[in-house]
Image 1: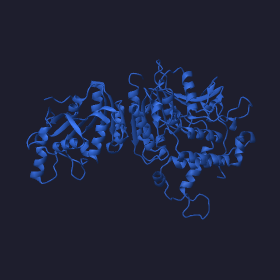
Image 2: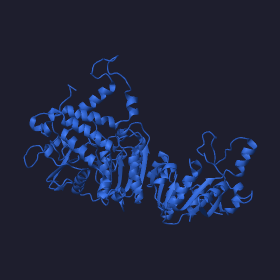
Image 3: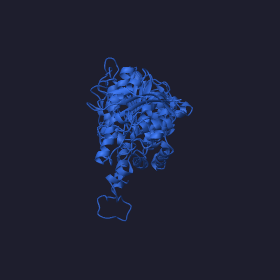
Image 4: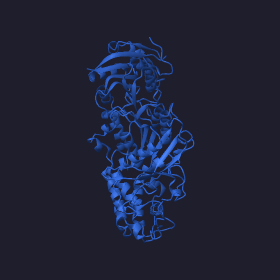
Length: 384
Length: 211
């Protein structure tokens, strides 16, 4: 990783983050502290109708951002969900007003560890309060209120975005008609917490991390963050897909080198994933957001009974899972459906056959597109 | 005798006639949701479905139905007792791995259980086997023996025996004719005597309850 690029610059200039609003707050956090004021960076696609009834909120995953359907300002690459969101796409921006906000704790313009601590004028670093999925959703609700939208048509998201979707349905059942949690779980498993801890330890073991004060030290823990991304990326794909794409193929060589330089294509691929990631993501944000996922346990808020999180819910649910996802396996997704069934909530559940693993929700999965399109079309009957 | 409801498969129309308005209904093996949609539209039921095929689940979701992709053989155990007013199993029991276990779950989950099934005792089936010496293929059982999903075929009389073994009583029974018409039948006539609906009905619809 000697040629790994360094984090170029924080994405805080208005041109970088799209739209942004700074609200007085306070945003009361689960940890007991609060943020005041709080900035939320977001993007919108499509137009809000006069009745303000066609808004769909999209919740991004761990390393996502507000650029779901437009080019990323730092990388220049297309938005992370252009397969799903856009004109004529399943989340059709010709019909729907789509909002996607950078989570609190993130690094694309919303208040997070890179932001200046009002008390010191310096970047928060580890003085930033621990945030939770529920805190992220509270901030999104503040944004939706700010935009004058009383009731969202839908909230949609995959992975950590799916956790936020579940939290939305539980916290604000009267503010959303329909929800689509994709490839997620009602709580983070021991295995998932374990992988996150490996990533965090990689970041904190990087001498350039400086106890989280790398901005003041003029450094960036690129190596640690890249290793964290490499380890995490393995969990996003299935063993079958890795085998299909890479097998034991060698990278730019005819024979084994008998050295530790990357011999195998899979090694080069992971190095590339790590190297490109550090160009666009902040190391401390990675610590905070992985922690938020680890802390997520929706049943725990309701005496350990997940069904109680959705009692008397008027929300319509469409839960989507992928057969080869071992990070958030179909069984965990289905447990949510069972909990919803137990309280007679309106829930549909699909398990899409694919070998693409967890990342399938970001990829070309026609069955998923059909599910989302059909569900949203019906949810929008008479509304949008 | 009643004519089939428009656009609804005859056995489904017969089942629909057995469902009370406003009931909470679980359709196990709900296919593309035609029956559930009909029941929601005409009887204002609170309908749920279980369906194994992804394409069918998507069709249901697009109709606004609440359907869980799953397998009757494995998923019914997760549903609490008496959770539904009526549970429906249409043309599916013969395709399950464990028909008796499935039927026991249905009787546990629903206050009433409606089951439709093809009749392997139908005279055309018997004649095809007797005269042709090959596994019968009929309009309702149109598969080769080696690729049929129908792994537990039975006659209507056999099914009545199973309901008794499961401790269920038959609230109502209808014989289905090949032309789509259904007529009420006395289930005793299925198990007593060699003629009657066990020979002449192409299929049957039963409404069951467990005391």
